[in-house]
Image (cartoon, rainbow, N blue to C red; front, side, top):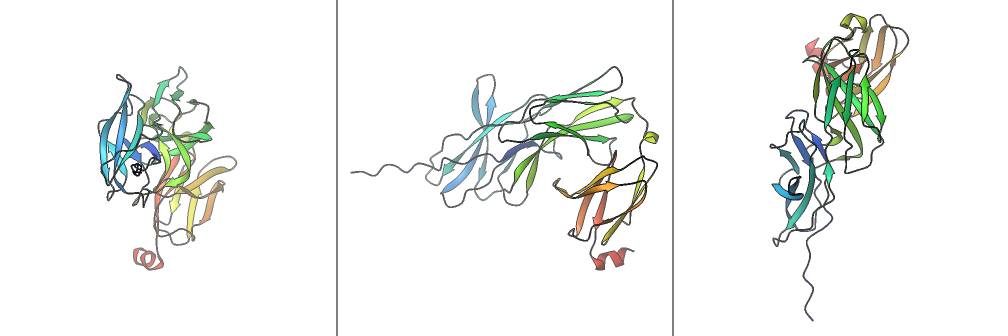
Length: 285
């Protein structure tokens, strides 16, 4: 009796699809499954005209499984992706479950508010959408609000005056580790809005020092009432330290952070600081 033909591994899945915050293009991330005879990963994108998934890219097993879709325009539409694997015998598996990206849009209200709306992400479960904002072309995005995972709209009632940028973010329970990089969040495209809202003088100013810092970071906060929340995140967006601060000088213990660059996010601002080793700190003093 002849043996049944061996089928290619059929459980390969997408880990996440995000709008890359650097290139502005869609990034498809998958994790390798070792020991099942995989030669390459094939990436498919839905063609909504033909209602068919079409091959858009290939990654060899030896490559990192992060694929940038250079043809995608995330601000124009939401995209659906699937993957398959080709085994070392040249056989291709069936397609995986789909992942669909978040497309964010914005409109201005009559009282200078900014109305945001988006489609749900499809591919894994999540509990909330986080709303991020950046004012001007410098600095970084800060968290200004969150809504439940079944809500697809948010209104920024008091945007700072000038040019504001917005993103939507969801967190994945388990970090994706394709090989060289780690991914914990899915991001939407970035939208831009010009506002005549509150002026910079109406929000608390803050000063962060020393920079680089060794074990303690000082934060001087201008005029404000009550407590405000802060977060310290790494370059992948993971929150490592969080807490609340008051007007005046606040001291934050950063001794448990590894040496490197971090983002300090507070109220309407964001600053970059470096956690240095004792040797580097003494050298730069």
